[in-house]
Amino acid sequence: MERPPKAKTIDISQKTKEVAESLYPREKWEALEAGIFIAKSRIPRSAEQINVLEKELRQARILVERGSTVYLLPEATNSNEKHIKHPDAVVDGYVMEFKTITGSIRQVEERYKEARAKTAYVFLKIDAHLTRHDVTRKLSGYIERKGYSGGVITAYFTQSGEFYRWREAELGQKKSGPCDPAAIQGKPDKPKCPR
Image (cartoon, rainbow, N blue to C red):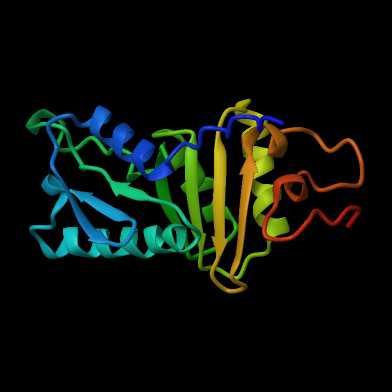
C-alpha cells in the first residue's frame, strides 16, 4: 500500500523574510533576538528612536513567544518620506502595525483607527484594565461603521495574559444570537457561548 505524499509545509519564517525583502529589496536585515530581525536603516540613532524601538520589541517578543517571526521594518523608505509613518513589522508573512493601549476604552478605537490606516493586520497590546468584551464591543462598532472585513486583529491583554485573534468580518457582523462574535475566533480557549 502506497502512502499519500506529505503535504508541503510552508516555512513561515522564510515567508516572512521574503515579504520583508520584497517590500524593501535594498534593505539589509540583522537578527536582534531569536525570531526578531530589524532593518539596518532602523537601528536607532537617538533617544526617541531607542524608546520607540524598545516599545516595539516588547510587542514583538509577545508574538515570538507564541511562535511568530517578526521583521521590524524601516520607518521611511527615502528622504522624501521622513514624516510618513509606515507599518511596524512583517509578522508571519503579513504586514502589521503594533499599538499599545494604556488608557480608557476610547483609546481602543483611536489606536485601531490609526493602525488600520496603515494596514489591515493589527496587533493590540492592551495594558489598560479592559476586558475582552469591552474591547471587542468597541472594535465591532467601529469596524461595522467603516465596513471593514478583510483584516485581522491580534490582541494581548497584559493584565490577564490572554491572547486573542479576531477577523474583522466576524467582529463587524451584527450579533444574530446570544454568541459574542469575538468568541468565535477568540483564543486561548474554546468559544463559550452563550455568555
